[in-house]
Amino acid sequence: MSEKMNLRPMLNAYPDSIGGTLGDIAEFLRSPEVEGAFSSFYILPSLYHTDLDRGFSVQDYDLEETLATKEDLDALREAGIDLKLDFILNHASVLSPQFQDMIRRGDESPYRDFFIDWNRFWEGHGQMTAEGYIQPDESEIRNMFFRKPGLPLLMVRFPDGTDRPYWNTFYQKVWEEDGERKYLGQMDLNLNSSLVWEFYAETLKKIAGYGAKIVRLDAFAYAPKAPGRRNFLNEPETWEVLDRVAGMAAKEGLVCLPEIHASYGEGMYAVLAEKGYMTYDFFLPGLIVDALDRGRADLLVRWGQEIIDRKIRTVNMLGCHDGIPVLDLKGLMDDRRIEEVIDLTVSRGGKVKNLHGAKNMYYQVNAAYYSALGEDDASMVLARAIQMFMPGKPQVWYMDLLQGKNDYAAVERAGEGGHKEINRTNYTLVQAKEALAVPAVREQIKLLKTRNTHPAFTEDAEITLGCEGNTLKIRWKNSMGAIALKADLKRKKFEISEG
Image (cartoon, rainbow, N blue to C red):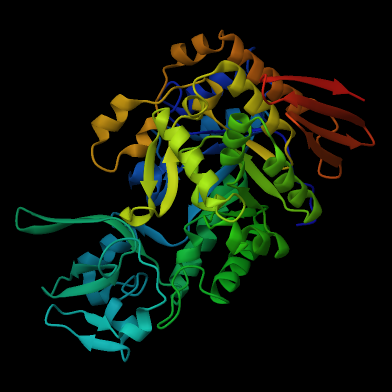
């Protein structure tokens, strides 16, 4: 982690978010209005061959050429834009070649143990049921963290007609069609299989070949499992796996960004930082909503100072493909204030996602960030200004940049569980370019270009933060220059000065 981190802005979008293909987004980035605003691009994983969760159920890591081609990636590279790409450590799609080989060849498949055979895993730690799976002893699963009701298993039909249980943390759907069992879902990978580690190495090499500099490790904390232990952030196995993957990634020139949501009070962000990893600043979105609502930045400054003091390498954001995190704020912001942030965002059209369906276990609020700020142009531009001056590498959701509003029609089309679609609207290239004429969008882009080009925004810069009354001040200074933000949070005005 000794290499200097590129702190310049990063666009965040699906490959079809603007125009329909990655080539269209490359054209958008080359437009005179936008060129020079970004140095990085986080492309969400529908870039690959996927089937569910808009990309997070990967069949294989080859390009989905209806959305993205090698030529599109070359165009981004030629424009000086490096990539952040996803690698889903914990699971693969049931449509992956490995799973398909297993259900076709059964015990003869080399991928028989590529996935986690539930009964082999729990052998000696529970009782066999009439349904053919082991019910683990209560003492063995007491500390386990399941994402859905019941045991996380899927009964898989083998060629000999037997049904065998396999570990399935996330989505599953099973049905019969023409006398054949069909599946959709994401099957957990068996870290005890050498083939899984070969797959990891091949995938990291492929991702680096696409032009990635950062690899986002999705769901990594679910991957290590052991009877009687936690299966989420299992220690020390989680860190052993992460270190092993990071070592493999480093050989390909990749830096790992582990993705994990945990409350501030648990201190997981600090553990990642102490171990030398980059971490997400999932606190910033809620802190800015709070600061602009109250007209005070005390919590924002407190968090920014902690980043500086602990030398935490962060990627920060306002909006993203998920919602505005609120679970993460627990311990940094008191519960009453968190509820006020949630209520405010919901009053502006946001949709609450509770943790695993449990009421009062808040997790995130799904909303376009512009709508979360009351669809007020001055607030959106000020929020972007604050993000540009906060420590870390700023990641910018395309809808925020274009001041997209809550998409209620998309939520309705998606049906139950479709809250996230509120902030995933696709734009035509014409619509995106028309948005560039909006004054507040142009102000955002101006801020991005300042962050992208001013020499003071480097990792070795001295950053000072302070707040007095309604005024927030942030200054960056290094041997090449200095730049400062002074913001009035009540009046929603700010000024930027050099020197």
